[in-house]
Image 1 (cartoon, helix red, strand yellow):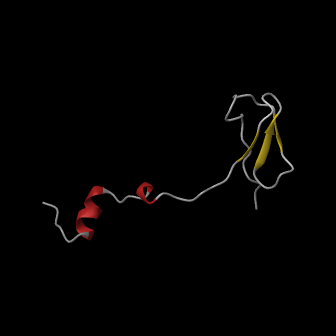
Image 2: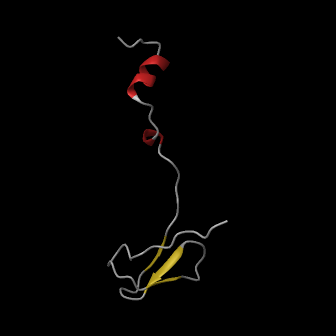
Length: 65
């Protein structure tokens, strides 16, 4: 199993001086702006999953002409 990806820069100041925080999984600290933040995956959006136009019409009972 691979490790999780680490952020490349702080979402607040843009600096790259980041280190993992002791506050739990996904928590990071920025040494430049002295902020702490947490990254987490919330899930997939239903609108992000779409079928090609021709397949959508066939599923709804329509026909392509």
